[in-house]
Image 1 (tube, rainbow, N blue to C red):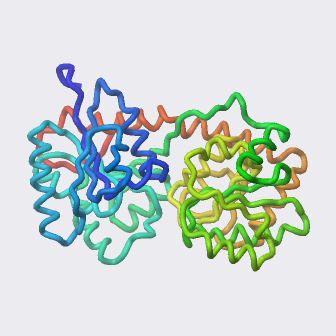
Image 2 (cartoon, one colour):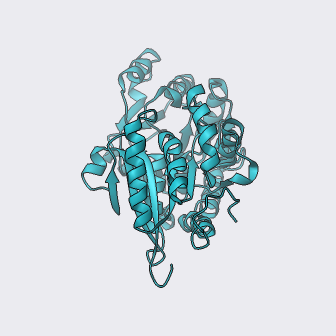
Image 3 (cartoon, rainbow, N blue to C red):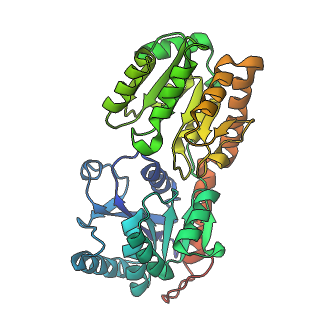
Amino acid sequence: MENGIPKKILYVIDCFESPYAGTEGQLMQLIKNLPPDRFEPEVLVLRNSKFVSEGGLPCSFTVLGRSKVLSPVTWVSLFRYALRKRAEGYRLCHVFFNDSSILLPPIMAFVGIPTLISRRDMGFWYTPGYLRLLRKTRHFVSHVIANSEAVKGITIEKEHFSQDEVSVIYNGYPAGKSPSYPLSEAEKKPRREQLGLPAEGRFAILVANLREIKRIGDAIIALSALSDSVSNAHLVLVGAGEQSTYRELAQRMGVSECVHFLGARSDVKEILPAMDVGLSCSESEGYSNAIVEYMQARLPVVASNVGGNAEAVVHGKTGYVYPSGDVDSLVSYLGKLFSDEGGISAEMGQAGFHLACKRHALNTMIEAHVRLYDSYIGCYDGAFSSREAK
């Protein structure tokens, strides 16, 4: 804050589809919880969405209406916009997603505004063309924020940033209703019935959009393999996407009555305490928001050992990690947690809860961003610099 006036920050994202998606959710938390006496945020969205058009963003915003990286019209429109923002006193630009990461850094550097970019996945979207462009525009990037050490590593390797140019800030989440968790079995039953689930049984939940990269089918196959040893095992799938392929698989595997599709939900935090195990079977993951939500609900976690999952899950303490696609290992670990010998599920769930509280507190994430922002705002003289953030 200068002379009592909050410093203006511009956030840029390709498209903002839903506040419940991983990247959009973290951006929403950041905007809502920045100290309002110190920072004034605005959002630039390259492509419109229903959520944005209905006024879902909690601050002022602009929709550019175009995002084609190779279109001169896009570059000219963004340049004019950047000049206006500079004249209005914006001091920093923070970019999310891939097209914005190419377009904004050189334009903002030209008008004298430093740009930070966020990386939040393992680069499944990288193509040779994108990488060529990213390696050119990286010279105009002031700093990179990764949400896990794994994402930091892949960003350095693929986009050719140096170690000092990339910092890790873990995802941050509001505190859960910890005093009421974990629920007793008697308390779980009515919650399950409200969701249209059987009242009794052992329930694994997988929160993810129904996409091939999430390997939902592995969970269904694992459930089928468990059906003989754990007769009351169920799988609950929460997420948007086409269900027909997975319903057909469940039918073929003979577990259609034990696989429950709840679709996209806004009440995931209320659903999780009624479950017994949290699953993540993805073949690529930067740092799973779902895993953190599982831990906040005191669920033990079984997760594929990809990306940041091995950082999120402490194997043998807060859950288990297994090689992606290794369904036999997935079955083995699920069986251990469903049998719950020696109270291992509750023990792991409690350990995960404490880890989530320590590492993923919302104020920790906000404070880390504030420190990084302060390292650029206030002492920036208008000349582009790619210095290290302190």
